[in-house]
Image (tube, rainbow, N blue to C red):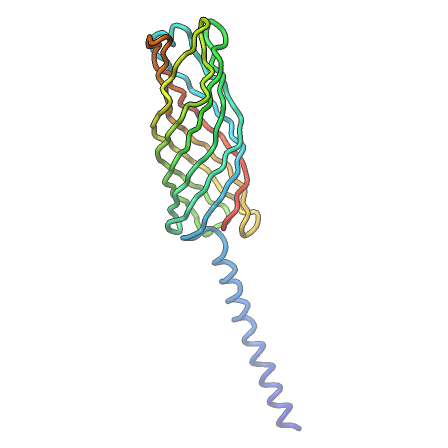
Length: 215
């Protein structure tokens, strides 16, 4: 009986010594799952405000042509190539009304998919700032622009650089909040009845807030 009690005592003592090590291992495993790591896919849904910074040339300048702001949803996908480097594809579309000294000129749709190479700071933490730079392709579609009873034609395609800065803040292990700012350069040439009117640079600043998930 005494021997059994001694064995039981030794087993209890061993388990007490083992518990801190087990807790430490569990804490390390939990910590390793926080933040973002190579192979993760981040999906964000944002509400964005598009604020054009308009520049024009030739006749468009004489007409004081402008482009209105717009607020639309935006969806983006980031694939983490390494723990700190990701590639993001941004998808969204908006419609903008064009104004001038002659009054409203109608609207045009803008589809600007953008591909960015990002660097994420503090990748293993719960608060992760990031910066990005890349290329924007803009498709101008569903053109409803007109002046003097005639249709205004625009160049449908534009390429330009894009810059980005933002921050992700974890709410749970797989859900986070996001705030983001981008500068995108885009432009189009306009003509009326075959006569060139000049170049319209839209070059918007894009402000966004939203929520994301890590997969």
